[in-house]
Amino acid sequence: MRVLVLVLLLAAARADDASPLVTVHAVATPDDTTIGTRVRYEVTVSAPPGIEIVVAQPAERIGDMDILDFGTTPPTKTADGRVVFQRWWQLVAWSPGHHLLTSPRVQYRSPGGELADAPAADVGVTVESLLERNKDASDIRDIKPP
Image 1 (tube, rainbow, N blue to C red):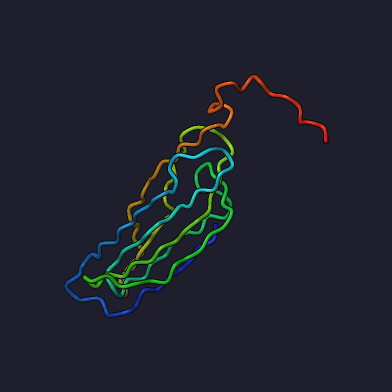
Image 2 (cartoon, helix red, strand yellow; image 1 turned 60 degrees about the vertical axis):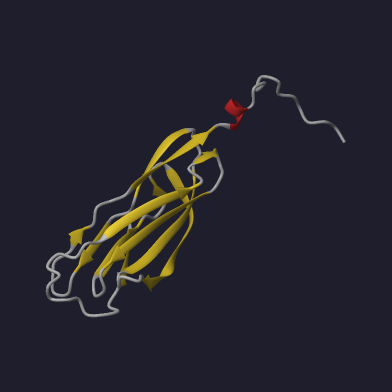
């Protein structure tokens, strides 16, 4: 597993912020799909300015789903001064059922502090078989000749 380090030092952290609050939010689109269909999985991290964020980068899979592509959006600043960035993955599942996706490990460190874990975010994706959707799945025929 590779680790991606993002340093968010847009402003100095205030001295009265003893323990910065880092939030992790995950969403999968669509959350109800079929086998072999791509799902966009996004993890959004929000932190006070001046906090170093370390996000683990899964190499091949997240949960039971294969990673096809991934990327990062540039950090932005919210109206209340927090820094927000987003990691995204294109995933695909090859088996039906409910798949639980737990966000990759997110750690943070205030200047001069120790690394601490941010709470993970879970999201579920339901994958259905196309054969189960077809009411007459037993009527399978060979292709027509030219």
